[in-house]
Image (tube, rainbow, N blue to C red):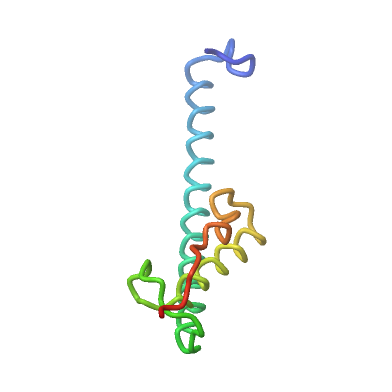
Length: 104
């Protein structure tokens, strides 16, 4: 489907328009990569700090590291990051926490 903006453009003008859009997509991908790296670094920092804290709850078995703090730290990172940048995939991550019950 041809939009009103591209209708009547010469092939060279259309090529330039497509190149401009491609450049914008490249810039957005670079920004997303930077945000992903920042999120990962923030997650590592919070997880490292959370692991040092003794958890009053037994591990729930859903987390490889076996520490409930790890799971909650990841959710905290997700909530913090989604608060400062609008990334729809990050919103509401804390709503998916499993119910953790102490072992008897």
